[in-house]
Image (tube, rainbow, N blue to C red):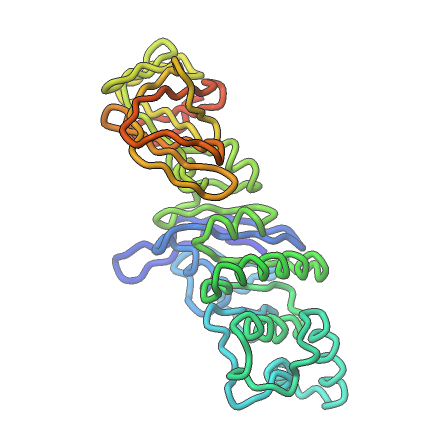
Length: 345
């Protein structure tokens, strides 16, 4: 499946700009971005629910840009589940087969098979109101799966679930997609979903593709300042200052960097897990907050006009207001042009 120079406008507002993306057969690709980034619009254009303003949509070698949604051989799973309340689980799952006119015995056979895959075989006689959120989501998935489409489209399908159930359903989704091998395009604003589910992640901002790569590469080798700040929890620390001769100098600090370029406005990015509280560290600051997460502690410090977060040991115990040092390996840091956001390598 291919987005070929896709553009989409709503009046004067350009939501997608020259969007190019090729999804490999059997791949689980996640479109990730903030609200308004264009990710859901891209999915809806691919589904045929919105018309493209420019460019083409291809499924294999077939141009489906102007093809009706029902003729695109896709199945879509929505955030709201979109189940029929007056139909049982079995009837909801069988609906696409019923529309095709498949004989009832074949419908029953296929519904049973897919219900077992998503562990719904004991719930087929229930109605949606009698199900939990996770069970309803599995019904929506089963209804999409029973069609055996060439492409799954999923629009924030887990966002209505609580945190524990989201974690469980992420694992279920990943396992099912690997079992079925169906090409899947998945939209989310949740970076944890993107990083745990995807073979590759396409990160969008304001309708423009910022980086397309594996989760590991996006995390370890961000293309620009936006990507670096979006991926990571807690987010990457940024220090701004003048960059010269391998050093970044700002208000109240002077630290080494992994590059020798000179910039009037440079940005040094350091992930919290690559920092440590240490006497005589390159940075000095006052503890602003201490948060015990469980297996680690997040320590936030004031360093000049900046705030910096360190991922520390779970037994960290120092008082707010105490002045401490922060050390880091310059080789683990990233440098960006503060004016353009471009990565400086």
